[in-house]
Amino acid sequence: MIFYTVLIYLIIALVGNVTFYFACQGEYDSCAVVSSVFFNISVLCQILPLFINKEEHEKNQKNGQKLICSLYLLFTIIVSVWSMCFDVSYVTSGTIQIIMLGIFLIAFFSVAKANVKSNRSISEAETNRSSSLMEAKANIRCAIATCVSGDQRAILREASAELDSMSISYDNRLAIIDGEILTKVSMLCNNPDNTLKKELSQLIQKRKCMTMLTSH
Image 1 (tube, rainbow, N blue to C red):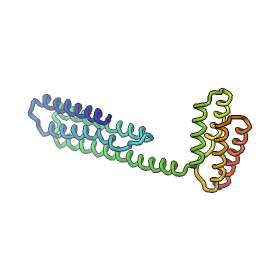
Image 2 (image 1 turned 180 degrees about the horizontal axis):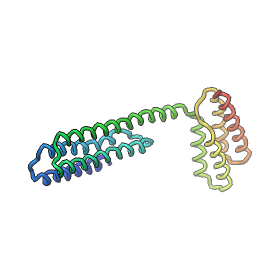
Image 3 (image 1 turned 30 degrees about the vertical axis):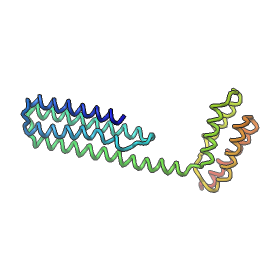
Image 4 (image 1 turned 180 degrees about the vertical axis):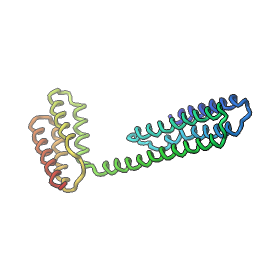
Protein backbone atom coordinates (compact mmCIF):
# COMPACT_ATOMS: atom_id res chain seq x y z
CA MET A 1 0.00 0.00 0.00
CA ILE A 2 2.81 2.42 0.92
CA PHE A 3 4.63 1.48 -2.28
CA TYR A 4 1.68 2.52 -4.47
CA THR A 5 1.20 5.74 -2.50
CA VAL A 6 4.85 6.69 -2.95
CA LEU A 7 4.60 5.76 -6.64
CA ILE A 8 1.66 8.15 -7.07
CA TYR A 9 3.63 10.99 -5.49
CA LEU A 10 6.61 10.23 -7.72
CA ILE A 11 4.33 10.49 -10.75
CA ILE A 12 2.98 13.83 -9.45
CA ALA A 13 6.55 15.08 -9.01
CA LEU A 14 7.50 13.92 -12.50
CA VAL A 15 4.46 15.53 -14.14
CA GLY A 16 5.04 18.74 -12.20
CA ASN A 17 8.70 19.01 -13.14
CA VAL A 18 7.98 18.23 -16.78
CA THR A 19 5.33 20.95 -16.73
CA PHE A 20 7.83 23.41 -15.26
CA TYR A 21 10.33 22.50 -17.96
CA PHE A 22 7.95 23.08 -20.87
CA ALA A 23 6.47 26.21 -19.25
CA CYS A 24 9.96 27.68 -19.05
CA GLN A 25 10.94 26.24 -22.44
CA GLY A 26 14.00 24.73 -20.83
CA GLU A 27 15.31 28.08 -19.58
CA TYR A 28 14.69 28.48 -15.86
CA ASP A 29 14.83 31.99 -14.46
CA SER A 30 15.28 32.66 -10.74
CA CYS A 31 11.53 32.64 -10.02
CA ALA A 32 11.05 29.34 -11.87
CA VAL A 33 13.93 27.77 -9.93
CA VAL A 34 12.41 28.87 -6.61
CA SER A 35 8.97 27.60 -7.63
CA SER A 36 10.38 24.28 -8.80
CA VAL A 37 12.33 23.74 -5.57
CA PHE A 38 9.37 24.43 -3.30
CA PHE A 39 7.07 22.32 -5.48
CA ASN A 40 9.37 19.33 -5.00
CA ILE A 41 9.56 20.03 -1.27
CA SER A 42 5.76 20.07 -1.05
CA VAL A 43 5.60 16.72 -2.89
CA LEU A 44 8.11 15.19 -0.46
CA CYS A 45 6.02 16.48 2.44
CA GLN A 46 3.11 14.31 1.24
CA ILE A 47 5.04 11.25 2.41
CA LEU A 48 5.37 12.44 6.04
CA PRO A 49 2.04 10.95 7.29
CA LEU A 50 3.10 7.51 6.04
CA PHE A 51 5.80 7.21 8.70
CA ILE A 52 3.68 8.10 11.74
CA ASN A 53 0.27 7.16 13.16
CA LYS A 54 0.47 3.50 12.16
CA GLU A 55 -2.08 2.19 14.66
CA GLU A 56 -5.69 1.62 13.67
CA HIS A 57 -7.06 4.14 16.17
CA GLU A 58 -4.84 6.81 14.56
CA LYS A 59 -6.61 6.61 11.21
CA ASN A 60 -8.55 9.87 11.61
CA GLN A 61 -5.45 11.65 12.87
CA LYS A 62 -3.47 10.51 9.84
CA ASN A 63 -6.29 11.65 7.54
CA GLY A 64 -6.08 15.11 9.13
CA GLN A 65 -2.37 15.30 8.44
CA LYS A 66 -2.87 14.10 4.86
CA LEU A 67 -5.37 16.94 4.36
CA ILE A 68 -2.84 19.48 5.65
CA CYS A 69 -0.18 18.08 3.29
CA SER A 70 -2.56 18.15 0.32
CA LEU A 71 -3.56 21.76 1.02
CA TYR A 72 0.10 22.73 1.24
CA LEU A 73 0.79 21.11 -2.14
CA LEU A 74 -2.22 22.87 -3.68
CA PHE A 75 -1.22 26.31 -2.38
CA THR A 76 2.37 25.74 -3.49
CA ILE A 77 1.19 25.01 -7.03
CA ILE A 78 -1.09 28.06 -7.02
CA VAL A 79 1.69 30.40 -5.82
CA SER A 80 4.16 28.88 -8.30
CA VAL A 81 1.81 29.38 -11.26
CA TRP A 82 0.98 32.91 -10.13
CA SER A 83 4.67 33.80 -9.69
CA MET A 84 5.65 32.51 -13.13
CA CYS A 85 2.67 33.94 -15.01
CA PHE A 86 3.06 37.43 -13.57
CA ASP A 87 6.88 37.52 -13.53
CA VAL A 88 7.02 37.95 -9.77
CA SER A 89 10.55 38.45 -8.43
CA TYR A 90 12.25 35.42 -6.96
CA VAL A 91 12.60 37.27 -3.64
CA THR A 92 8.84 37.81 -3.35
CA SER A 93 8.05 34.30 -4.57
CA GLY A 94 10.63 32.73 -2.24
CA THR A 95 9.42 34.72 0.75
CA ILE A 96 5.83 33.62 0.19
CA GLN A 97 6.91 29.99 -0.26
CA ILE A 98 9.02 30.06 2.91
CA ILE A 99 6.11 31.51 4.90
CA MET A 100 3.77 28.81 3.55
CA LEU A 101 6.30 26.09 4.38
CA GLY A 102 6.60 27.46 7.91
CA ILE A 103 2.81 27.52 8.36
CA PHE A 104 2.59 23.96 7.02
CA LEU A 105 5.29 22.64 9.37
CA ILE A 106 3.70 24.34 12.39
CA ALA A 107 0.26 22.93 11.52
CA PHE A 108 1.57 19.44 10.72
CA PHE A 109 3.68 19.02 13.85
CA SER A 110 0.99 20.59 16.04
CA VAL A 111 -1.33 17.79 14.90
CA ALA A 112 1.48 15.27 15.45
CA LYS A 113 1.96 16.55 19.01
CA ALA A 114 -1.77 16.27 19.65
CA ASN A 115 -1.60 12.72 18.31
CA VAL A 116 1.13 11.82 20.81
CA LYS A 117 -1.02 13.07 23.69
CA SER A 118 -4.04 11.18 22.34
CA ASN A 119 -2.02 7.97 21.97
CA ARG A 120 -0.71 8.31 25.52
CA SER A 121 -4.26 8.73 26.84
CA ILE A 122 -5.46 5.67 24.90
CA SER A 123 -2.52 3.63 26.16
CA GLU A 124 -3.17 4.64 29.76
CA ALA A 125 -6.88 3.85 29.40
CA GLU A 126 -6.12 0.39 28.01
CA THR A 127 -3.62 -0.28 30.81
CA ASN A 128 -6.18 0.67 33.46
CA ARG A 129 -8.89 -1.70 32.23
CA SER A 130 -10.01 -4.64 34.34
CA SER A 131 -8.81 -7.82 32.63
CA SER A 132 -11.65 -9.82 34.23
CA LEU A 133 -14.35 -7.53 32.84
CA MET A 134 -12.70 -7.38 29.42
CA GLU A 135 -12.63 -11.19 29.33
CA ALA A 136 -16.27 -11.32 30.47
CA LYS A 137 -17.35 -9.00 27.64
CA ALA A 138 -15.36 -10.99 25.11
CA ASN A 139 -16.86 -14.28 26.34
CA ILE A 140 -20.42 -13.06 26.12
CA ARG A 141 -19.87 -11.70 22.60
CA CYS A 142 -18.59 -15.10 21.50
CA ALA A 143 -21.57 -16.79 23.16
CA ILE A 144 -23.99 -14.50 21.31
CA ALA A 145 -22.30 -15.28 18.00
CA THR A 146 -22.55 -19.06 18.51
CA CYS A 147 -25.93 -19.30 20.25
CA VAL A 148 -28.58 -20.99 18.10
CA SER A 149 -31.60 -20.35 20.34
CA GLY A 150 -33.35 -17.03 19.80
CA ASP A 151 -34.56 -16.80 23.41
CA GLN A 152 -31.13 -17.59 24.82
CA ARG A 153 -29.50 -15.13 22.44
CA ALA A 154 -31.90 -12.42 23.67
CA ILE A 155 -30.86 -13.16 27.28
CA LEU A 156 -27.20 -12.95 26.38
CA ARG A 157 -27.71 -9.67 24.51
CA GLU A 158 -29.46 -8.12 27.51
CA ALA A 159 -26.61 -9.23 29.76
CA SER A 160 -24.08 -7.87 27.27
CA ALA A 161 -25.87 -4.51 27.23
CA GLU A 162 -25.68 -4.37 31.02
CA LEU A 163 -21.96 -5.13 30.92
CA ASP A 164 -21.44 -2.37 28.34
CA SER A 165 -23.21 0.11 30.62
CA MET A 166 -20.63 -0.48 33.33
CA SER A 167 -17.21 1.09 33.67
CA ILE A 168 -14.40 -1.44 33.26
CA SER A 169 -11.66 0.69 34.83
CA TYR A 170 -9.37 -1.38 37.02
CA ASP A 171 -9.35 -0.89 40.78
CA ASN A 172 -7.72 -3.42 43.06
CA ARG A 173 -10.52 -2.82 45.57
CA LEU A 174 -12.98 -4.14 42.98
CA ALA A 175 -10.88 -7.12 41.87
CA ILE A 176 -12.97 -9.64 43.84
CA ILE A 177 -16.33 -8.58 42.39
CA ASP A 178 -14.79 -8.36 38.92
CA GLY A 179 -13.82 -12.01 39.31
CA GLU A 180 -17.34 -12.86 40.48
CA ILE A 181 -18.81 -11.14 37.42
CA LEU A 182 -16.46 -13.09 35.14
CA THR A 183 -17.47 -16.38 36.80
CA LYS A 184 -21.18 -15.54 36.51
CA VAL A 185 -20.76 -14.56 32.85
CA SER A 186 -19.03 -17.88 32.14
CA MET A 187 -21.94 -19.73 33.77
CA LEU A 188 -24.45 -17.67 31.80
CA CYS A 189 -22.63 -18.37 28.53
CA ASN A 190 -22.79 -22.10 29.20
CA ASN A 191 -26.43 -22.00 30.29
CA PRO A 192 -28.28 -18.80 29.29
CA ASP A 193 -31.32 -18.45 31.53
CA ASN A 194 -33.09 -15.59 33.29
CA THR A 195 -32.07 -16.70 36.78
CA LEU A 196 -28.38 -16.43 36.03
CA LYS A 197 -28.97 -13.18 34.18
CA LYS A 198 -30.70 -11.69 37.24
CA GLU A 199 -27.81 -12.79 39.44
CA LEU A 200 -25.38 -11.17 37.00
CA SER A 201 -27.49 -7.98 36.98
CA GLN A 202 -27.27 -7.84 40.77
CA LEU A 203 -23.49 -8.19 40.63
CA ILE A 204 -23.26 -5.46 38.00
CA GLN A 205 -25.39 -3.10 40.09
CA LYS A 206 -23.26 -3.90 43.13
CA ARG A 207 -20.13 -3.14 41.15
CA LYS A 208 -21.57 0.19 39.98
CA CYS A 209 -22.38 1.17 43.55
CA MET A 210 -18.91 0.17 44.74
CA THR A 211 -17.38 2.18 41.89
CA MET A 212 -19.30 5.28 43.00
CA LEU A 213 -18.21 4.80 46.61
CA THR A 214 -14.53 4.27 45.79
CA SER A 215 -14.45 7.27 43.43
CA HIS A 216 -15.17 9.70 46.28
